[in-house]
Image (cartoon, rainbow, N blue to C red; front, top):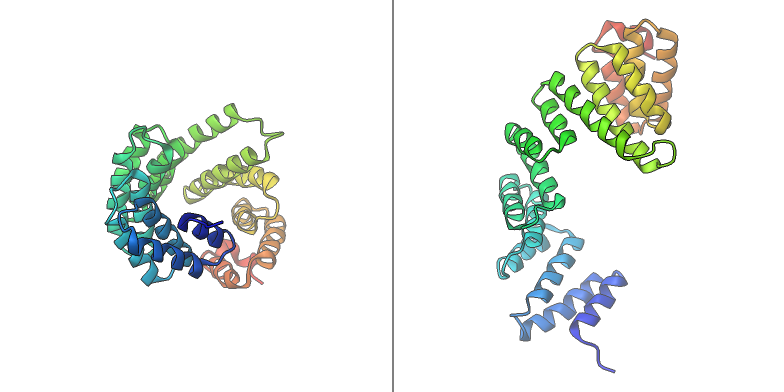
Length: 264
């Protein structure tokens, strides 16, 4: 039984034999260069290989197909991986414009690229226009408007808590915890340490082994005068953190004399 080029390529991809998959696709494309779907499959294999020359070859392939929203999305990812962030942003704009149903995937990509390229006001406006309050909160935090960020995080938390049962849905509980951490960080930057401590404490109930939350809760506890608790948490956080991150945590302790008693 003879296999088609697509069947061979799919089998090689499934087995992780990417070089053989590319060989099968290349042989097919040599005789059928108009086959857009096989060209798109080759793009996906190039992405899995991930080397710069393969990523550039993927861009060349994409330039030879009639671009869909999904193609522009892929193009955006490739440009980002190559460090061409403005091109990645422009491709995300096209992905969103080509998406007739304004699906969340293309909008999320565009908001991400706007933040990554420093188009923060645009990201905030677009997030609010689409009622994506958590993204709006993140953009406000990027703009150093923590008061607005807290307001939007409040709204995001209200939605999560309204839509999901926090006692039985672990995924929802983790989402809520991550929003609490972000709101806690905004409170912390505002000097609202009581509110920050409450958010970090609640987040740790859902993610008890997160050394970053432990550390930040320890810092705000120090500001609240609860030094013994702060020392215990900070030590736990430093011990649990990857070795590559410990120096960053220790350097943070040197930034404020409030943390003097927390230093090793």
